[in-house]
Image (tube, rainbow, N blue to C red):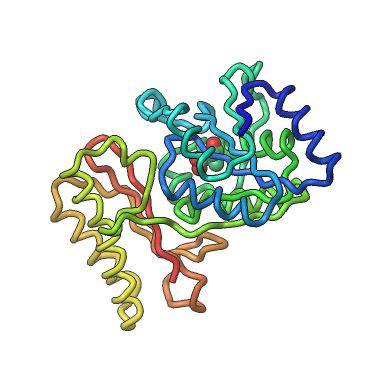
Length: 280
Ligand code: PAF
């Protein structure tokens, strides 16, 4: 496995691969890898000749300085995991390599970014759009892999690919969970064991809500019930609990076709902000 920190060396490597007619999968991440990240690589390894793993903690998408500073950075351990899992190349640039000058362009994803994560973290999806577009241009992959856990990010990236006509396939991989239901996330590294057990309640409350909706309960009643459950847990501060259409991200008032709806949650457990969703 090759590890590149410079854009030029990555480009040289990719030029050789393309000349040899190899297909390229790109997995953009911010590192601190867990099994969810490795599942993205596993899909890419099956579907492409070459898998390029991006590891870059992108300052432009952070709206909270403390979160940026505390974001776990574990490059050596990440590379060991990736090599074992059959990764071809890692691209782990420093901030100045990725952004020799601060980007001036801003991206606006319209109604996709005025709700949920976008409403709570204004400017976040501008940063995601900029770095992902940059990575698509640098790597020019045949396929790019993202996790369903970041459902809103997936909707934004689908729009980016469509609006800028990136010639690639977007592959969305399912959320990987701990046995207690907690969605795997790099931010879980900031939780102790007791907090990790509490964090699993997010999935439990979403599952109750999903069952209530399947039983025909009104969306507003389900939301109220979930909000009350969170309010009864002093360790949590709920940011939002929404039931949305997975493509438009518009709130749903009445059930829509199966597979097109999602329950989305963001909650603070102490200072750590966790997000999760279930598509149903
Ligand atoms: O999902 C993430 O880890 C990041 O938002 C991404 C897509 C790598 C862009 O920095």
